[in-house]
Length: 254
Figure 1: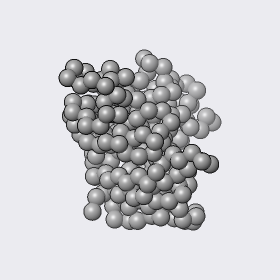
Figure 2 (figure 1 turned 30 degrees about the horizontal axis):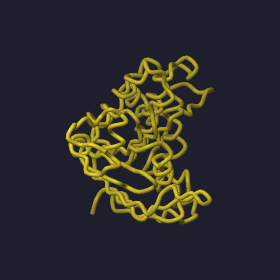
Figure 3 (figure 1 turned 135 degrees about the vertical axis):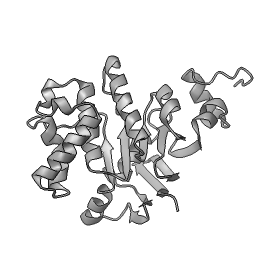
């Protein structure tokens, strides 16, 4: 059995089929980059895995524990969310709380850790993302890149089995993207299991262990960065990479 198994994931909005019976396996410690044209269900996939969107059909198994994603049980939803954490495009930090308090919040409220233990874990994760010196500051004092690094520390503090990242650099000014990508790279090197939606293709090439190309709610192709970038097999993936100036095999012509 794979560490994460997603089966039959389907979601539609009205007549628009966004996810169409999608199956995906993720090994422990893998960094799976989900790529594809805009509006093809990538973010919806992540949101369904954390039940921020309720799929029409599908199930997920994480480390041997199976969840029916259509089951409307708040208790089951909480159990699933204890295994997953989401890093969003926006940072969603509490403005009235310090950096330290933001990272401690889930540990105190969800895991019921005492204040001392929660502070210890939060301080460790903030140091890991290079934000330890900012623990007493409020979000308004931070750049967008710094806020996103705090958001990553907050997610990691919960020790998720599956870390979901939805376009974590898309809301940042270009000069701030690099610092967040470096943080994600270190997070991957620490052995975290990550599913990442991003348009940062050069970063994907360097960090991902598996790349999944999605279009029209289906997985068109998946493989290692070498497979995807150097030897794509589907016509549609080749077209996508050529438009991004990432596939330049002159022997291929559309």
